Image 1 (cartoon, rainbow, N blue to C red):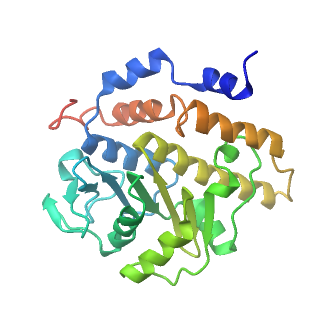
Image 2: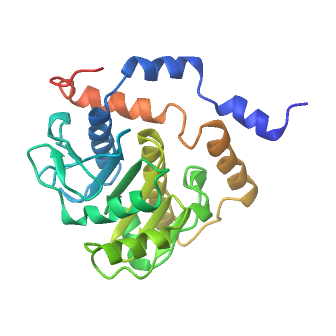
Length: 265
């Protein structure tokens, strides 16, 4: 008889069709980080031009967004390549001083390749309320409670190594942090996983705000939440099946010329 874990893995593991779909896209790292920024902008990670993403490359350098470009407009040819100290190795734009938070994280957590920071709308509301919101539906439960930290010692900026290290230490081995009176910080092993975690966090915060504004509701039962957490971790390697390819297709429909110039590998 098939175990629960085996059944979950069989049900949610990426299909051959999905694997072929991803192989067909064959995006370069510069294209991936641009598509992530644009896709998240549509999902409420849209505080004008602010926010930062880093993406570790095999040579332990990093791609990042230029300070002068918004998430909804950045293009692959504008992406910067930097070293672990934030020095620009490739690119014609500048790097935000707040990149120190991301680089300090990469020093302390080398197993994670992607970091995302922004001020998403509803996550920022809960950062002011001062707590992690409850999970009221299954999408909100894609992120287990023990994967979300609330960083209550945020002082208004993370521009020094000491401030960045304190924030990273507060995150611990979790995948998301809500920064008090500020925004969100999400880490992941892949671009697809980063998209799933970032959208799930913002969805959780949005739904909780609506439910509590309506007078409250019933949190999702723990049994269902545990099953979902196991499903995502075991069956999907932390990334929801089909979600990232869908987001990529959406962005390419909106801007068919986005990958021209770099081209698909």
